[in-house]
Length: 169
Image 1 (cartoon, rainbow, N blue to C red):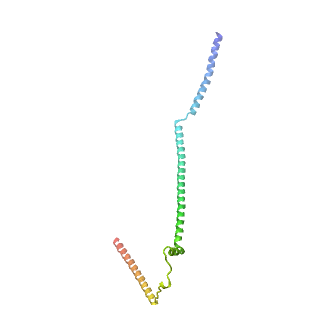
Image 2 (image 1 turned 180 degrees about the horizontal axis):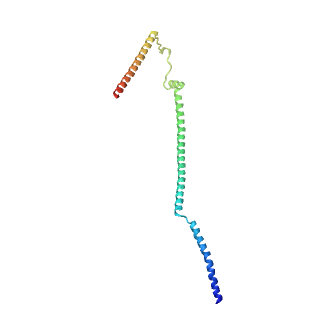
Image 3 (image 1 turned 135 degrees about the vertical axis):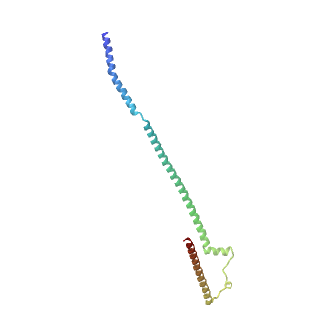
């Protein structure tokens, strides 16, 4: 039995020496778990930063959407400008056709049956130089009367302004 007691005693010492080691390992594992545990405030910070990044990405995408829409509108407007320029050019051609005297003359002769007047159909007027002077004098007098009316109008406005101003004082 002595041998058995010693063995038993040896086992006790072994357990005694092993238990601090086991306790140290358990403590280290607990510390590692505690280190790896994420605290609640860290979780909130991570969620907030993820939301912030998501909002930033969405904002960038919305900016690109607006740019694309504006490019589409600019493209449509430039197409409309080209169409209007072509329409303006067509109108200029039409105006040129209407303004050209040879085309007008041809249409007058062909469609309306018009012709140049003959010498006997023409009437010549003989004007006296005195009559021309009378016409010029009459025109000058009317210009002078218009100036006088204009001056009297200015005077009337001026007088009414002074009346209103004197009432305000």
